[in-house]
Image 1 (cartoon, helix red, strand yellow):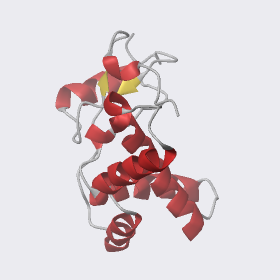
Image 2: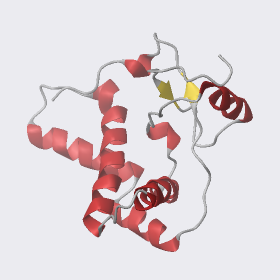
Image 3: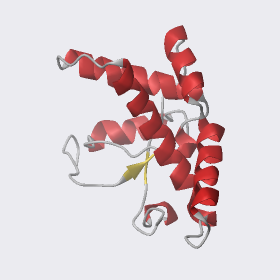
Image 4: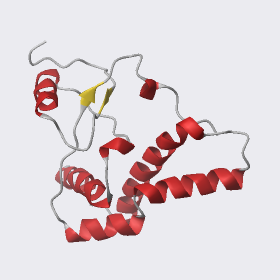
Length: 147
């Protein structure tokens, strides 16, 4: 498989920092992309670092992300990670107001938009995100939260 793309493969990250074995694996596997989970982002500064790379890629492609685009990218990452974290305790029978409050609390536990904005403005370098291959029976590949 040396130097060949593995095609459509689900990949997740082992943690918030890329490990040497993971780097070697991905250099060989050449995946099309990665799925990030809550365990991959420790704080707003790290999310901002990830977003800085995404915004640079958009700019390099000739796009000019607006403040609204940046908010949407931040909220997208935060909401997806929060909902993923809620999966083990999610109950569809709960009243909508309770579900929305649970999502808000889970999102704020990851980062607020103000935290991310401040970290983006500071532009401080932070750690990179690591990745690790997951096998098909991994618990985290189950369906997303149902509303």
